[in-house]
Amino acid sequence: METVDLATLTHTLDHGQGQAPDTYPLLWAERTPLGLHLARAFVDHPRIHFMERHILPELGLLVNRFTGSGWVAHNQFYVDVAAITPGETRWVTRDLYLDVSVHQDGRPMVLDTDEYLAAVQEGLLDAQEAAQALSTLHCLVNGLLATGDLEAWLAQEGIYLPWRGDMRTEVKVGPLQ
Image 1 (cartoon, rainbow, N blue to C red):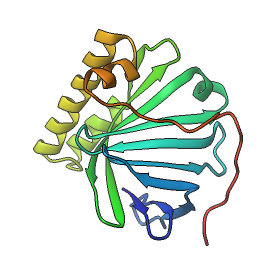
Image 2: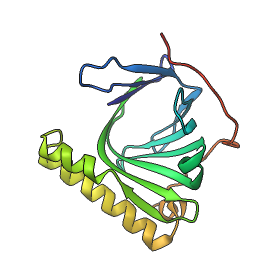
Image 3: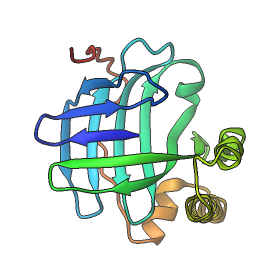
């Protein structure tokens, strides 16, 4: 589970399983007509340095652009399928275990089906959540295959996501204590 706190401009990752949550400062967060747009630095990650994200409740998607090296540099977008609960000052997202990386040439790659299947088998997703995750994934992948591009598919849906500046600038900010 992840929580974005608009009052404190923080992004908290609750890893569950008895682990303490990690809270990171956001560089900015703003409401949009479609959801929430935010950015933060990544800390101690071997390949990711920076994340800019659009949280889209109506679609059940977290659309990410990462700056980094290796595999990250070859992907235009990384999209998480999620359950999203918007709030006045706090937004909560829950990973539904299915992700899609969108390569620079627009090709989608579905990721983490093993995690999804394990979550279903372990009861971490109920039948409704499992169905929602699959429906969302199918809509996303079919849209990507039909248009060849995430932004083109979103434009067909009447959605235009603004992105801020050059993402190659490396920003390092540590977790809040």
